[in-house]
Image (cartoon, rainbow over all chains, first blue to last red; front, top):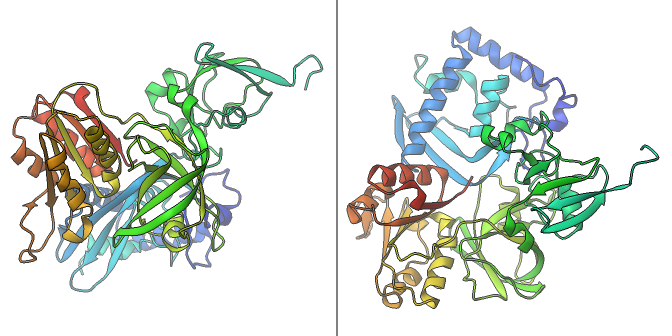
Amino acid sequence: MKLPPHATDLRKLLGPSRFSADGFLGSDKRSPEDIIHDDIATLARVGIDKSRLVEALRTACAAAERALGRPVPIAARVSAVSRDWRGRTPSPFPGEGTFAKGETIFSNDTTGASFSVSPLSLHLIDKHGFFQGRGSPYRVEPEVAARMMGMLRS
Amino acid sequence: MDSGQSATVTVDINNGRAKIQIRRGTSLLAGLARNGLFLPSACGGNARCGYCKIKVIAPSAPPSDRELPLLSKDEISAGTRLGCQTKPLGDIAIEIPPEIFFIKRFSGRVTRKALLTYDTLGLNIELTNPKSIEFTAGQYVQVKSMPYDGRDAVLRDFSIASPPFEKSFVDLMIRRTKNGIFTGWAFDHLKEGDSVSFSGPYGTFRTSETDAPMLMVCGSTGLAPIWSMLQDLVRKECRRSIRCFFGALTQKDLFMLEELSRLESSLPDFRFIPALSNEPEGNGWTGERGLITDVVRRHVPDCSGFEAYLCGSPGMINACVAVLTQYGMPAENIFFDKFA
C-alpha cells in the first residue's frame, strides 16, 4: 500500500489542520507508513482482505444513513448509528476531493466496544490502507472492526 | 517574465458585465477578491474545498490534477475550473454565478448567544460595517472563526435564519460537530459582544413565485433557511398552502416549536408537523412518530401538485427526494439546500 508520492512530509500532512482539528495520527508515534504496514499485517494475520472489510463497512454505513439517526442492527449484538453535519471535508492528500461530514458509530452492546467511521476515514482505508493512528478519533482497529462486522468469530 | 508581456491581464466577467485587471499569474480567487468579487472558499485557495468554481469561457484550458477530483464530468466539459487554481497569463473571459456580484464582506457584533438545544446554538449578529445586508430567504453566509488553542481561523457556511426584511442583523443556527474547529470556537470561545466577520449572501435556495402549495421538510439547523422563508412569507401575506415538517430523533433535538406553531395563526393555510423517529414511548410525546419521509407521506399522500423545500442532512434530503419523486412530484419542483 503506497501513500501519494507527492506527500513528502506525511506527518505534517496528516497532523492537525484547518480541516481536521485533531489530525489523523492521534498520539501514535509510528510513521504513517508503519501504521499502514502494521494494520495490513493484522488483516493478513486474521485472514481478512481489506477490500472485503471496506465493502462491509460501506454497506453498513449506507444502512445506517438510510435509518436517519436510528440505530440499525449490523451483526450479533452490534448496531450502527449515523450522524451527519453540514459541509464537506477534504482528504488530507491534495487532489483526492472532499467528503461529506458525518460518521457512523458502530457499537457492541455487550462488550461496549465501539468505533466510528466517516466518509473520509473510509476513503483513507480504501485508497491507502490507512486506518489512522492510535488516539485519532477515527482510528479503526482492523481486527476489532472485522470482528464487529461479523467477519471473524468472537 | 518576457519584456513584452504586461504585468496585468484583463478578466472579462459574464460577457462584459465587469472587466477587471489582475496581476498576471495571480489566481482568479485572489484577483477577484481584490476587486470586491468574493468567490466562496473554505480552504484559502489550496484546491481542497472546491467552493470557488468558475467557468472559463476563453481561452479554454484543462483542469489540473489537483482540480479533477473536485469537478464532475459535466463541469469539466462545461469549462468549470477552480478559481484558486486558475492563474491567467493572458486576458481571459470567465463566467461566475450572478449572485457573486452582490456578495460583500461584513463585520458584526454578537448581541445574543443562546443554546437552542444541547448541541445547537443560536447567534444574533448585529451588523457594524456595512450596517445592512440584502439577501433572499434561503441564502447563507460564510463566517470566519478566530484562532484559538493553536487552531487556525476557518470559514464555514451557515444559512441565515432571520428574515430578509430585518437588514441590520443576521440570526444563525449552529450545530456542534464532533471535534469541529469552527463549532469549538463558536460554542466555547465566542462571547456576546465579540466581533465577527462574514461574507455573503451565497446560494440559490429560495421560494418560487408560484402559487403552488409548499411542502417544507427540515431537520436540525436545516430549520434556519426554512424559518427565514416562513417569516418572509408571513410578511408578504402569503396565501399558499404550506405544510412544514420538522424531523428529529428525540424531543431534546427539537427547538422553536412555539414560534413555528404560532405561524398557524399568522398564515391562512399553514400546518406545522414536528416528528420524532427515536423518542422512547412514555415520554409524553403526543406528536408524530416515525421517519420523516413516512410522516410526510401520511400527511400528504398526493404531493404531485406541491413544491418541496428541503434543508438538512444529505441522508434526509436523499430520502425525501426519493420518496417525493416516487409519489409523483416532478424533480424540477424539489428545491433543497443539502448540507454537503
